[in-house]
Each structure stands twice: as C-alpha cells, then as structure tokens.
Figure (cartoon, rainbow, N blue to C red):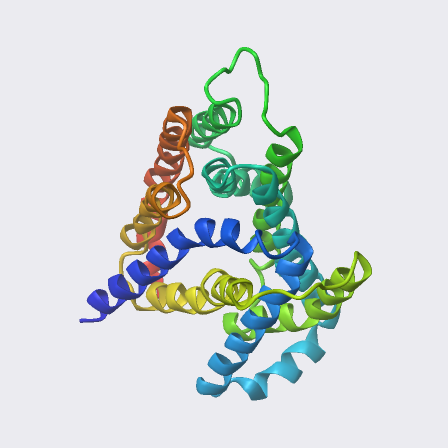
Length: 301
C-alpha cells in the first residue's frame, strides 16, 4: 500500500513538473525574469508556510534559523533567488524546448561537482554518462549542426548551463543539512524574498499586470517551487525502491515537449529530441551505477 502511495505521489510530482516549461513561457509574456522570481517565490513561500503549519513544523523555524543563519541565507540566495533568475532569463532567451532539456542535464553536472567539492570518486561509468549528456547538450544547442557550433542565443545556452551549476551547488550544500527539508526550503524562500523583491523594484518597478499573468505566476510558484517539492519528498519517504521511483523523472522532459507543442504551439526541432535522448542515456548510466548503492541505503534505513 505504501509503495502505491509513493508511486502516486511521484507521478503527481512528475506530471506537475512536466507542465512548468509551458508555464514559464506563458508567465514570461507578463513578467520580467526578476519580477517572475519575486512573485513566484512569494506564492511558494506562502504555500510552504501553510504546509509547514499543517505538519506542525512552524515551531522549528526560529531554532533552525538561529543555529545557522548565514547558511540558510546563502541557500536562499542560491535557490530560489539566483537560480531561478538565471533559469527564467534562459527561458526568456531560448525556446522552452531547448532550455528545458539543457537544464535537465543538472544531474550530470552534480556528478562532476560532487567530485570537486565532496571528494567523491568519478568512475568510468560517470565519464561515459558525462560524454553522452554533454554531447546531447551540444546537439540541442546547435540544433544538430555540431561542426558549426553556432547557437541561436549563446547567452541563453550559457545561462541554461549555469543554472545546472547553481542547482547542483544547492544540493551539494544540502548534503550535510540535518534540518527538516520543508523547514529548510521555507527558510530559504523567506530569507531570499527581500532580495528578489528589492531587485525587481530597483530594475524598473512594476507595471499593471492582468489577472492571467498573476494566475500563471501563481501556478509556477505552487507547482515548480512549492507543493511539488513536498509531493516528491513524500514519495521518497514512502518508497522502498528509490531507483525505481527516480526513473519516473525520465518521463518529465518528453511530456513537457508534448505540452509545449500542443499548448503554445512551439516547434520541436528534431535535434532537440536526439539531444534529449542522449542526455537521458547519460542519466540512465548513472542510475545503473547507483542501483547497488540505493539498495544498500534502503537496507540500512
């Protein structure tokens, strides 16, 4: 019964994550990237606050913050503030069908950064995964014209790849965080809000935005940053097979491309599919390498 609940939570999270690339592009029609960060972060902070209250964890906020105030401020500045600003700008410059798969290579980036910052060993399988992953990135970014190495938006491609560095760095900094995950993420969002709101005001202020824009940015705040995180966290807690649950993530980019084509009529270049498959192959190689480790972890819990 618990495994069925885990799969249900996992599928719900994956389906919601699959919609956010489309939601990003719709929201960017109404907001600048920094305004989008400020508004979506506010919505997400409120949602996480409600969740923390429902779970009876509000009394953990101040003690957790007092224990490591600069640490949580740094986490909040990385994610959501800087990470989403970089990511939204990448989506602003690139077709979502390019930005989303490029950002999806963050797990491969994490392997390299874990070796650099945590001293973890890179095995031969990891190098093969990196080769497939980053070759897929080049195929997507050049629309298949690898030899020419010409990009529609070099800055957009660079920002999409920088977003993978920031997301991987965020998780590396979280490796030794013993605090409750919901409390930790909520603190990051709350502490980052003055910076994102202040920057949005400094860079030009706010013009009147129609209700469609507020609805779109609320969707992003709820289902990219807030509720979906809790759904995935619950799935990970309930499952006895982490590797099997993690494989659900591979559905997300393909569903996302279908939604982009059907909802906002974005043209999906054949090279995007080829590059995405190469990134997925790289990630599957990583999954294969980690299965024994996943079993060991589950057995020790």
